[in-house]
Length: 238
Image 1 (cartoon, rainbow, N blue to C red):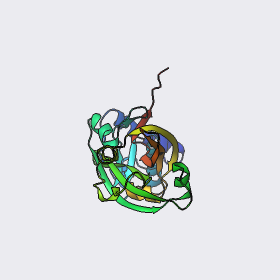
Image 2 (spheres, rainbow, N blue to C red):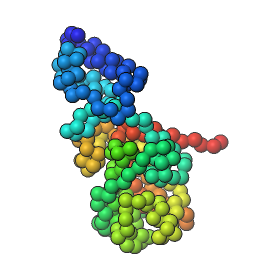
Image 3 (tube, rainbow, N blue to C red):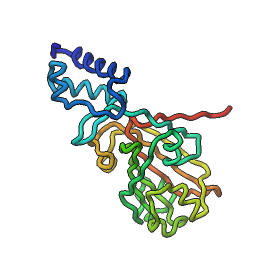
Image 4 (cartoon, rainbow, N blue to C red):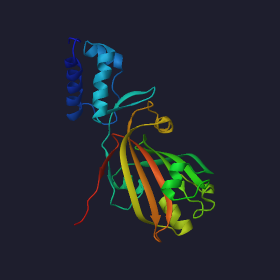
């Protein structure tokens, strides 16, 4: 294969895509090292890397720091209109969910969080940072910000569990209205470190502002997903 034009990158990308689509490279399997691929295609590692980056942008492959390239598993269906939580949503689709607590503490609220939760200046919030896995793959880093007025002592609970269920069982609080905002993003430092990907990797940022059954503004979540991990949908009845 000549390595003198973008045709080489396209040819490698299409060859790997065909193998993926025909099941020869199954979901979650590890690709050979870039050096091995460059030998296979008789080209340079730079050209192979460009082809892999094209496939990553399409959501067909992903990479992990110091581990290499893998075939992306099926996306999780994320229905904005369905009232559920991460563990229930993942389990309902026949997959295995896991939550890992990174930190939980009371801290001063940033200007952004004050705005989202409609708090006055110099307010405190409970920040809970967690990483989440689907079928052992890290897919989501989320920062939860809670109004401490409604959740006294929450940092003393097991926060690996569903916060939705914890709210209901210990605080008699259930979600009411939820507001979503979504934007594509480049993963920032904390999210990239939690997901074990390179800084600036493509991601999807989902901001959720949550009210309870009484209409009180109780918390907000800022989620950072691997861009190939979910398929977002919403069905609005007319």
